[in-house]
Length: 105
Image (cartoon, rainbow, N blue to C red):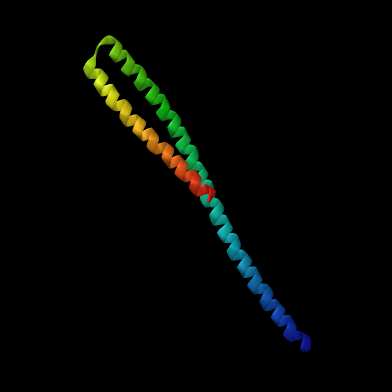
């Protein structure tokens, strides 16, 4: 009888410990999933930045061609398009830095 009381206490402690481990494990998986999605988001952002840089290079070439040929109205439109794309690129690069900062924390 004396050991039955100790056995019951040990079984209760083991059960509580196992429940706490399961909860911590679920939290770890949730953290890993969030981390994985953050890495995917950053990869997509880098791909988008590369595409934006290619687009900006094409815009610059078109702007230079319009200036060289003397097409002032087309050059003004191309300059506005180029400025808009460069602002968008800056926003995207800031988003990447923000995402990386959050993933490091």
